Length: 482
Ligand code: ADP
Image (cartoon, rainbow, N blue to C red):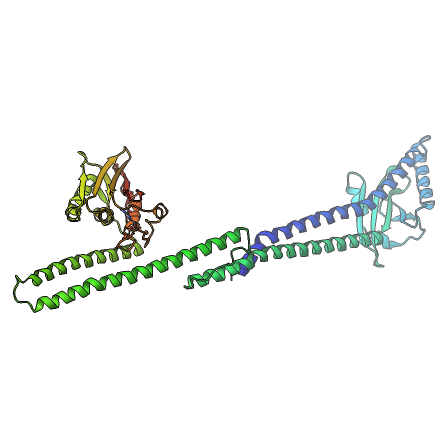
């Protein structure tokens, strides 16, 4: 399918034009040779006429005009009789009606009078006329007639007729030659063009076949990387990279699903076990009764977090819906801080936050913005050691507002720093988690027209900053779906 279409496009776009140009060149060449050949014959005759006319002028200028006319007529008849190119031309003299008076061969054949040259000479301004016709014997001839410019008795015109057999043969050779060259040039164009087009189509076919295999799910299919070192080679490289990335995402996704299912089983087993235990305890003051309830509580929290992660995951897959409105980033951050502060303290950490005095308006979705803060704080808590401090700072420039969460935790290795925003990526220092928290943060913030920056030093801590554009009235178009 693709194969035929590129060749068809080449035929339409390139070959057709080249063929037209070739045709035009041949037509010009043939037209010029025709004019040169047949015009040459006509010219030769006209030259002879003007020589004769020149000689006539000098004839019998003395005496009265009647005598002069008579002597010119005689001179003309003599010229015809003594004409020395009889083998090439039939020279004849015509009267005012176009009737042949005398001919150089002496035969007064009517066969040569068919031409319209005499009539043409009578009407044309130059007094010349010419015609090409076929004699009853089947010979093609050219006739040229020139009116005699002086009175010469009953002679009104000179006429020469010559055979076109040789000229026709030469013209035939020209036509054959140019047709031959044309066909040869066409074949050459076809061959070189097909060679070139096929050199593109064939590797493209391979690329297409492999890409189809990848699309059908064979993520191990690869193209030979080094075979072509042109655009096609680079395309192969890109497709291989794409397959590589797909395979990696697929692997991470499977890992994510299996780790989540495993993690779901542990709290569920624990909850189920404790429910069984509590069922048999009648006394609510029993030590195990309280412990059981407490454990069921924390395990339920863990399940809740995991379900949130699963939701994040499905949002990432299906696109995050945003319902934006004008919000005060300071108020949102303060809310989020209040929400996590208890947990921060529970983990033995300190929290420092200085609330800016004025509101910083942004155009955002409150639920998704909350999720951004929760994910960032969650990481800060998760990767901090007891006794550490988590800082929240909010700063603004005329056009942007930045919220930064800094911790004094274990930090991220420099080689992992670029990748922590990728879906499912977990750095070496990772504890529990599925690797999608920061990917969700990044997607949401980008959809809101902002950016996420992460700075970190191993053993010293990490700062995650989100920067959003400051809202100016009329920016509602930022409402987007990703
Ligand atoms: P997870 O759900 O595993 O925390 P994230 O996308 O939130 O996934 O983070 C990706 C990885 O980045 C984590 O596995 C962790 O290794 C690293 N990371 C994120 N935040 C921090 C932080 N504040 N301190 C140290 N490492 C972090």
